[in-house]
Image (cartoon, rainbow, N blue to C red):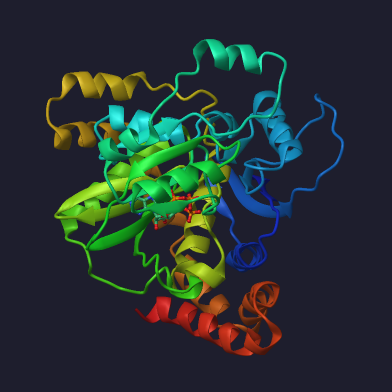
Length: 409
Ligand SMILES: Nc1ncnc2c1ncn2[C@@H]1O[C@H](COP(=O)(O)OP(=O)(O)OP(=O)(O)O)[C@@H](O)[C@H]1O
Ligand SMILES: [Mg+2]
């Protein structure tokens, strides 16, 4: 006789509306009873609530899909406690989110040889007055010529916070005068100046969820609902492989199960411009056509992790990547080496085998769900939260139709 166990997946949410409903409903419809190591494993999902907690109280979740840690610190501390005390598995590693700003990610990946545009960090224009500030700056802050740095980097460039996100404080700079006024306006923020990849021929975002990747052609100039384009066949197989391997390298290096990597191609060369996204955009209103991919990838990975009790890596351990860097002499070989570490950490082979054995019906169940009234209502909820009343019907219909197209594409 096999014994039954239920694995509990917690959703730690903020403003997200649509994908959790879809996730919960599809999980329910999947009605999984997975035979594994002499047990029958089923799944429950619950939304994580915010409340006082004892540091020693047990945690009832096996996995938490977290969307709060990057800004809501009570949840971040609860998650850290649950990892340390109760062996919780969480997407994404909270210590890594906390300590690896955009800045470190540029440095670390440049060191591994990934293509990062020339980037400088400049001290802030203004400061919060603190006791030792005056004496510190008088002694050690060197006057610098912003114009000279601008000439070294070259125009156009982008000024953006070293710990950026959500397009906050990002500006494009075409000349020295704009550089000076943007710096004057940057206030207390610590800023990067990054060489602009201009006149590019392709801009993509590569989403990674565990060992699953999806590359989307991105149009930054389009209105929000058209930025993630529905273009297909825009990459050669080799380019797609390289982008997946770079994203896998980044995500496994930093302990991010869910992340997106922005890459721009110019004159046949790729540049990675932003890949520290602890909480990638998961909204149906931006992803539309690609939204089912995200929901299904999230389900597959969280179910696999919960079912197999995949061990959470509390520490990052970068040494194996540096061993590859030292051992191999070409970028292609290095990337292969980094990706091999990534596949090992993400358990790619076991995951694919698991999906084949136990989740073969996911596509069909998801297709049926996404065509349902329930899905329509979930999409509408998100649209209602973002659009003016007179646009709600039209945009709900648009996103709903694009979601259907995913399954017929
Ligand atoms: N080096 C660059 N070359 C060309 N375009 C750039 C560069 N850096 C930033 N951009 C443009 O500015 C946008 C925002 O920059 P970035 O992604 O670094 O900031 P962010 O705050 O993370 O924004 P988001 O939340 O949209 O990802 C990019 O999507 C891109 O369109
Ligand atoms: Mg970005």
